[in-house]
Length: 114
Length: 115
Image 1: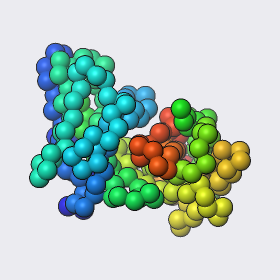
Image 2 (image 1 turned 60 degrees about the horizontal axis):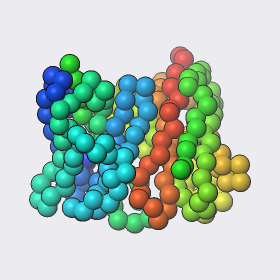
Image 3 (image 1 turned 90 degrees about the horizontal axis):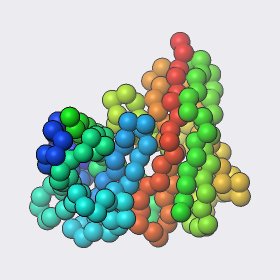
């Protein structure tokens, strides 16, 4: 597609439950990025993929967060045993291969942990 | 580590006037890209303008232009003839060329446009 599609738009989970977010990048884009935007508007980089391979995972909390980009499937970000502090908007972005290519963002998934 | 600083948490401008949003960054790299993204209340992230560090000419996109001062590590955004639809959060972002491609964002500036 021509847009980065993120589902669901809003996800509500009780503390301790699992949350799974999905992202379909723009067709033909080789890179996928996940960012977390907390309530103070600050963006935090989580992880990036080049096709199905992890490219940079330096922002990922090691214990509870995991992500995948498998062929012919939407990419996913999964949070196990959610905590109140995981409440945020999670953005997925994709870009084409090439040094000057900008990242195109999806509309985000708002995750609310109660 | 690279950092991006937006020193103006909030700015306001009268409709049809001009406003400048400030951004400074810290990096030891010489090749990189800089971006301004707009985030309206709908929370979409919209690319406004981008600048390659190797280009001396300032980027321009219609009413939006930048003042890129590489030596000073400054990258301000000028919005001319401000419109009500320009009201949004504006984020400055940095990306190192040849690195992990991740964006490093500033904390944002909330722009209000007064009719």
